[in-house]
Image (tube, rainbow, N blue to C red):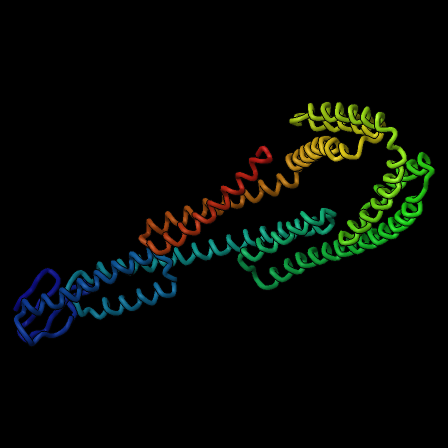
Length: 409
């Protein structure tokens, strides 16, 4: 007979294992010596030790479900309870008991995490609904429309809630979007109607301008053309595809008259040369406003220059393009400065840029944590995938930060 602290082999080849409840038959051995029998059943015990150790690691370091973990524990417990191995089976049973407790705790934790996630998703969707309902009353058609589209993308990225709650929130969200779309459609329909009315008004102005184009009553006709120009500007813009043609016809009628008048006034070249000198002085005065440092002051100064410019009168035709180009260059610079000032001080644009930057920063931080966790867990493939996504998201963040800096943020 042969034995060790955890088992023995009797004369008949029966192998016993010692437990807290006494000896149990582990099996029988007829193919060799008692020492070989014990060694065989000890190896089976070591195999159980390895399997339990692997399961402990999976429970501790992976997302193994409670159902799968419990099934694995039950399978191993059947083998331990069967006693077909020589070793400290009671210790293995205690380890399995500990695993049962751990799996139960993880199950409860996951339930709590799921409930927390659902609550966070509910609050997030309620916030989206509230913002959508507020935007539904907006008249910032472009920015509000873009924001509503962004809210839809955000919604799609959130986990679903229970069917009833999710459907109710989506119904409100969808109604808000529909309300905005209807209002926007009505607005642009009204705008189209206004532009059609503008087109008709400008057709009448063109008809009068063409009628006056053959007049030789120079001063009153020129004054009326100035009135027509003011009426033209006050009329607003017609449809984009019609506006250029309307303006070309209106301007052509004026050109006929003023060219005819210019032919009569050729003898006044001396006066026109003096006008040119005075306008060149105004161009020089206007150019001193560059570069623009005070938009408001520059616009006021340019307005004063413009008023004096209009009061001067005509210049020789061959110099008109050059002198007008000089003042127009300054006008464009002031307009661009005004546009830049508006962009820098537009709170909606800055808020959108800041909001996007914040969202991207949160996404980058989250991806970096997930990648670090995956690499720490030894999941290289997942870590590399997350790091590729992180690099892409970081590039977007860098672009957003650059845009935000343009607002002084």
